[in-house]
Image (cartoon, rainbow, N blue to C red; front, side, top):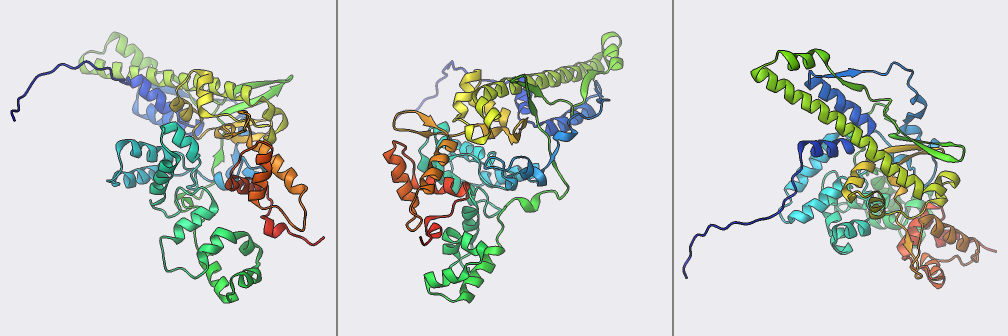
Length: 444
């Protein structure tokens, strides 16, 4: 077999990001607090940038909500105080990416998906993105997506990437096989009983001693329900809304919050020096810094325009929520939002990441308004709020002596042409604060 070398021309198209586009994308993902720090860092490194502070009284002081008081503003399923603790340190993402780098059995595309999962962890380490939506986004099976979530959940600290308290505790337990008897079953089925002190019910159910239950309970109590809490700063942090929506004469007015941001201008001395006297390396240096300053200003302007455009579309689609509250949220997918504003899904993801909106109904993470709906057999899509109301109505009408199980509720909804999984029923029931069927039973 002969081998030979050949020269071959190949014409192909590659997408190359300019420095302006790269910086604009970077700026787009910053919250208003992060952008303020970025601007000040850029000003410290660039003598041509001058910052002018706002002299007016800070109009948003009322909008600064201590994370510890978040629940008092919006006490519902969309604003969980567990998820609004001091922001995680940037080194956390770096640490997780380093753990990803040593996973030698992953393909490039699989690494990209795990990285996406890492960037969708909330401040305490819980995974916020939905497996089905992530699978659809990357065009993989839900099973494959679950495998990659398992990869993330194998990282340190234990419990990272969990999607519920039960899963978080279970992920920690399975790493140590020397745990007391009953631990797994208590986590999976009896957290509420433990919280209520119903030890006798458990001893009767599993024919064990009270001491065994107490031993397992003590072990569970020392587990960490919030994996990233230990690395958070202890100082009080505040939620500063990036967008403010106000109602005026029946209309909703959108403001992009830039009151925390210093105004940027060009240093007149260096600008004049560049124009009249600078030569050689000095001139090249000043021209580069001047270009950097203009890039920064354009990037901030583009961030504000994109954020306004996306918020305007969200307000238009979630108009009923702003008037009536949480149960009026309608299904809204990332893809649908991207199409409505003619932007790529990745741009929308950057735009809404780590950003908050102040509305007449309270302060919310911008991600709150992206709601995965339930597809009916008719082809229509209903919101989780609608389904929850249906579940609540079914339970209110049940026989108190023979409460309906989650599967029977699912069957009842299916009879109404609403196909929904049993585990989803359980999730919505828990979010409604309704006990499982075995604990709802009462004598007539």
